[in-house]
Structure formats: C-alpha cells, structure tokens
Length: 387
Ligand code: MN
Image (tube, rainbow, N blue to C red; front, side, top):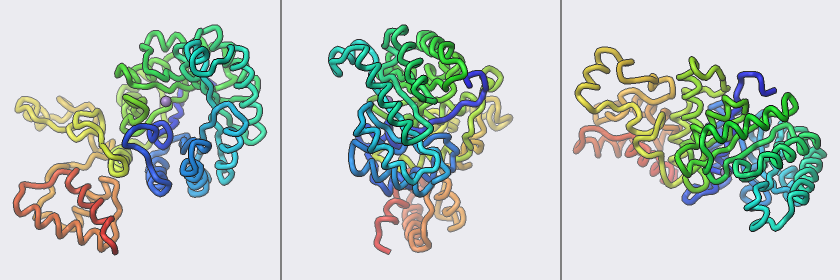
C-alpha cells in the first residue's frame, strides 16, 4: 500500500489540536468545525479521546451520527477500558477507526510506564486484538516513535500488523527529529511492513520542523499524515494541514503525491477554527495568515501588478482567500457583506446579518475599511445577541 501516490490526510484538529491551552471545544463547537473538515475533504477525522471526558465521548458520538459516511477516529490508550469506550462512542459511525497508542521509547518505558519492552509489546498487541473485535479499521501509534530504538520499533510495528492493525503511526511526539533522520526511521518501517499496512506520521513543531519532517516521511514512503488546521496542537503544535497540502499541490513537480483535500475550503476552515478557539494564526502564517498574500513593498507591488506570478506562487483564490480582502467599507452592500462573511466561515441569519450590517456602516464612517478580523468579531457578536 505504500507504493501508491495518494496521501491520506488524517485531521486531528479536534483531538490533538484541542489538547492545548485556549483550544478546548464544546460538543456543538466540534460539530461546527467537523462540518468544515468534511467540506475540506479530510480522509480521517479524529474527533476525540472518549475515555478522557464525557464531552469527548459525546463529540465522537455526535460527529459519527452527523457524518455517518465520514471516516471517524477515536483515540484510546492500550487498555481494555479505553478501547471499549472508544468503540462505544463510534457506534453510530459506518467507517469507524479505533486509534490506540502506547509509548515505545526507552525514556517513556523507564520513567512513565515503568514497563519492560516485552510488556509494552504484549499490551499493544492485546489492545489491537481487542479493537479488531469491534472494528475493521485499527491504527496503532508508537508514541515517541522517533526516539524509539529502531529494532524494537520494527518489532512492534510487525507485531501490531500481525494482530490486524491497518495503519502504523510513528509519531515524533516531542518534535525532536530532523528530516533526514526521520525519513530513515520511516523508511525502515515502510520496508518492513511492505504492503501489509499504511505507515503514518504525526509530527510536532517544537523545532519548527513538523511540516518538513512530514514531507521527508512522505518521500520515505509514509502515506498518512496527521495534521491540524492552523497547526494547532500540544505545545508548539502539529504539522499544519494547509501547509503540507499546499506544498504537495504547488510543488507537484518535485512531490508527485495527491490528497483528497478541496483546497478552496482551506481559508474558511482556518477562519472557522479561529472563531471557535481563543486565537488565530499569526499574521505571517503561510497560506492562511492575514499577510500571506499581502504585498507591501513598492517593487513587489509593481511586479505583482504587471504579472501576479512575479511575487505570488499560489493564487489566493485557490485556497479560498477572498479578493480585496481588507477593504469592506460603508459603501459596500449587504450582498458583499454576506459573501465576505461566508468566506470567513460564517452563515448568519437575516437578523444577525442586519446587526453586522448596521454596526459596520456606523463604524465605517470613521474608518477607511474594516479588517477581516473586525468583521469576524462583529459576526461572533451578532450570534450572541438573543434572536
Ligand atoms: Mn500529538
């Protein structure tokens, strides 16, 4: 399975992404975000960690019920209680995946788990075996895989596949690896598993290498990338979905791989996430940041106006960034406002739209135009006003 060129996008915005300060989401918020992820065409949608909380359990259940055709994943440690809870939450899903994980590095075995390599191997196999009694699609993650002894990692990977795991994920849990090093680790597991399973990667950005490491892993044969919108996630975050997808699209000359992502929904998904959690991407964030397509220097503007591709490698429209995105002023009509709000990920009722329109015409009297963030703030405010 690792020879083909289709890369599966496993979105973990609602699980790893949520597991970071300022990012926790309620069940209705996760449902709203899931709608955008479905529009975007993610292959697997990790909706939560059901044993962790009642809210996570309900979110997995609700998303499975709302999008029965989506491939929904639920996280579980390698214990019977965790696996059973994940299976229970996934009951409404038609394409459920249980994603079970256990640390395999010596440092985690010694200090965190206080278990031997043999015990960890046995627990991993038992969890995969149990998960397979509930669902066909089981993923095993070797937590801290990038810092695991490669011989042992290969042994664990072969063993869980023999128990029925279809996907083996080798995370760089602490964001420590570098592209060539990580590619070597992944390449070895890919070679060991051959056609028996898909090798997956899950990279953290502690050294700013999450996307580069994921890309190196794809070249080494990985065919699933775990990532999040706006790169949110534990600590410095995860591999950014919009970046890895747009690298493959923009540089298909060097990277002949495809994904199922509808890139024109990237900006709306990013904006929707920003409206739900407590922060948005930094202004200079690639693809979805406020300045990602802004041209300030005179020489750049001059070149850009003569021929867009002199200074722009991606057409903003292709990722759903609205054109003329900064100026929406008092002369703009309701229609333009409605379109802009949709671009920003909002669909407002007539009353809510009226509220935003009135506020904007008042504000715009004193300004040269409103920034997208200000418009988004007003849209959020409108949704808090009782109807
Ligand atoms: Mn993680």
